[in-house]
Length: 386
Image (tube, rainbow, N blue to C red; front, side, top):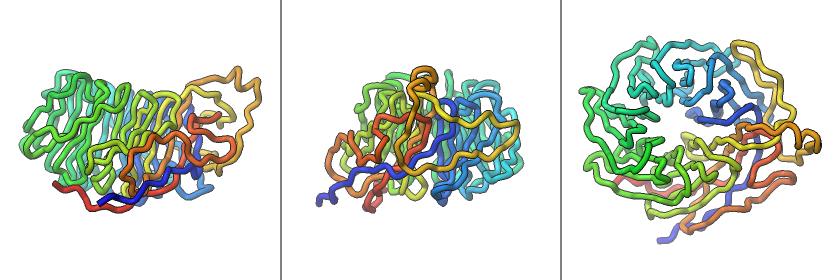
């Protein structure tokens, strides 16, 4: 039976704050907060309530590459090129503890579903598991022969999956610390991997412009998508398990219907590579980040060491006036974080180019580094548990 037709997402509001490309995003479990990391070395925590102030946390000495809220939302982990992991309390005090996690860039950090441990991945070719509250190293997983881009726990915490520049995805048993299986079908570096909410499947994105979905029980390739024209940098499953969203260096996001194995939407919101994307825990929103070359106008001054509260509030949609002199002289690569909601129902293919726009906004970006919220939600459908 055909599902109801999808409504286009519409821009609701935007945020601004990062001074360089946005590398990672994650929602808290109650969707009240959104964390973002950037090449500007700052971690920002945005409040989804309109007109709320954002927190800007400083402490990392180089670009932030990954962020993840703990299952309770009381902690926030970040990893960086400075080889450290920081565990933050995401409130106005912004207290954090830093520790040397790896001997090279930390590419990925992810909490287990019970919150008692977290896993990291690094350019030192290792995956490491840590105790959360003691922040104590537990063990390493060492079979990759190149940089490890991503590592995630399964929903039940028994398995770990990792993606590497050695062109493999590896499935690990946490208890035995053994590699259960290696998936070698990608033709290039594997940039990102995650578990389906049911825990029965994994999806991986690659520099070969593809997304692949495997069954972790039979290790069979279930689905293969070659829809992007450049590297796929990130992906995220909808909590229902029925949809997958991808972010690519071709500047687009694509929403896939996994039940029918086809493309639903192509979203053109970035002028440069879309580097990261994440659904909220409820599935009501999704956020994407990227690097867009645009004029930089009216950014607040550099914060001091330690945390500081960002003075810029979430902005309603309104025309942005940019003086011609600034337009011509202040060109700079800035972060753009698009906060979008998912789509209601939808069984038809739709190339999405033109949302309902507020004056002064376009689907191709705008004059400031900002985060966008888009309207409409996906209708509930039976969960894919096969």
